[in-house]
Structure formats: structure tokens, C-alpha cells
Length: 249
Image (cartoon, rainbow, N blue to C red; front, top):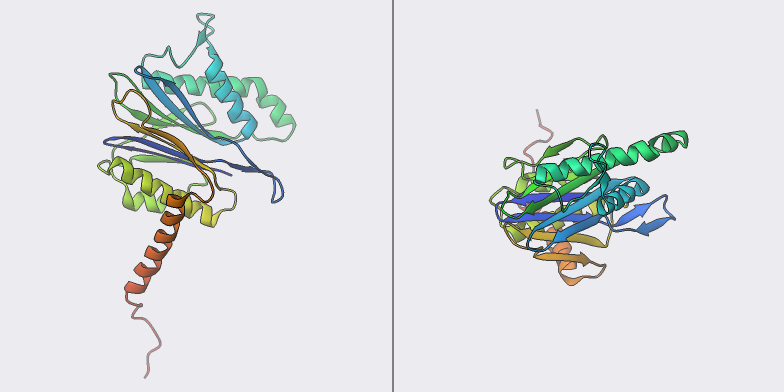
């Protein structure tokens, strides 16, 4: 299991991913699922992955090395694409290339070709954009009406994002709400856990503003968890009890 969220607001982009992978209660490992491709002053992309770890790592490696273009015979890379749309297409091509290489063998072994990705960023002089890429290599784009996308175990964190995030949300409020969404998911699903990686990209900046990891015991995240729990308890206590009950004749 995993949980990743991307929030595209007026001031920039926040992407958050947990690092837990597990094949059972006694086989828990940590792997980075948030990958950054950056050429400062030119372009920066962030890719968050969910699904079969071997598949997602193969896609990431292919994007670093380049995806074969049958028309030109050359390798297409993220540094060479001309737009965010073309970059998302290249990610989709990498997914399909891995499926072509490994899909049949995985199927014969009874392993599902399971992958989904969030891909966002900006090329200098062009709009900042955020996409969700599916296992078939197709994708959808994040819009202003619902300025976030999620992959993995998303159901626990979605209500928080639905209620608290708009396109005009401050960039660091978006980070805060994204972390609350992550905490809520961790509370409800043991397959999602620390450490947490996140990146903050300000619109039209030359490079990421923040790219860091939250480890267990990190003071701010611990405080955020405690404050959010206390706020929920205070909120439900403040709401009157339902006026429903047994009636007497």
C-alpha cells in the first residue's frame, strides 16, 4: 500500500508520498516513492509512484535513461520534451514500454501489472501542471475546480482535501493540509507510514523550494498530529447531540 497526493494551487505545487512497502505484517520495508528530475533554471518535474515496486522502479529508471523512439531510433528524455503535456506523454510511454517488456512474464507468474503515478512540474516560461498517469499509460490533468490528485490508499485523506483545499489556498497551507491528509491515512491504514517525502515548488521558480523527508519523531509533524486530533475532539464535542431519542406517550 501507499499514499501519494499532489496539490496544485495558485502559488505552486506540493507533492507528498509515504515510503512504506510491505508483503505482510512481518515484511515491511522503506523505499522512496517521490522522485525529482531537476535542471535548475530550465525545468523541474516530480514523480510520485504507487503500485508494484518492481514496475514503478523500472519506469523511473527508464525515464532517467530515456525511452526509445521507434520513429527516430533515438532515446527521448525529460530534458528534451517541449511541454508538460509532452512530458506526461513520455511518462505514459515509459509505462507502456515496461508493460511490453515485463507484462507477460508478470502475468504468467500471477503478478498484476499495477501502477499509478502523479507527475507534476514546470518548464520555464510555461504553465505549471499536474497529471495522474494510469497503468495503460493514459493520463488525466488536475484542474482548478478540484486542485489535487491522489493515488494509492486515497480514501482516508480525500475528505480533508475536499473540505480544506481550493486553488487559492496558500502554498504552505496546502502543504499543511496535505500532511494532515497523510496523517489521517496513516491512522487508518497500517500499510501507509513514515518516513514521508515531500516537495514544494513555487510557480515560476528556477528550482524546488523544499525537497525533504519527515522521519519518525520529527517535532512539527508530531505536533500537527496531536493538534489535529485535539481539534477533531473539540469540534465533535462542540456540536449539539442529535435531537433524536425515544418518545414517551
